[in-house]
Image 1 (tube, rainbow, N blue to C red):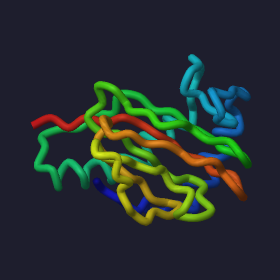
Image 2: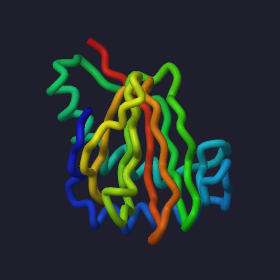
Image 3: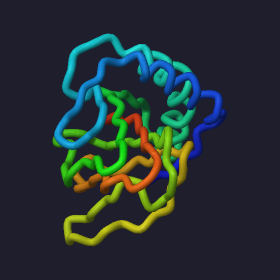
Image 4: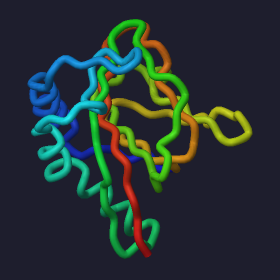
Length: 159
């Protein structure tokens, strides 16, 4: 599992939230707003891929001694009070990544469970990206206070 700081997070946060605001209002299960299940233009992802995530992926590639990396898809999720996302996996994904664009408390970070039903303890904060195997169960618990916004994506490394 990796936890990486996003350089210039405050600058990127403002720009990304404005671009996400342009997205259609769409819910999925008990997630307040997401584009995961709709087909539309995603200007925030164009910016995210080109200006935000590239140095982090390059850093992970170097650490893993991989020859290349790629992102297979991406989406955002906004959680308002009492909204959540149940336990799930990303089937067929090498890694799953979550950028905490808005995160009130590390207690509200994505919960990750091993195959032995043990919760992985980690501390993440706003402005960080977590990367973990896509086969691990994970969820977002019900939000209690301020809104939580994440950008999630699946990534692959080749050797």
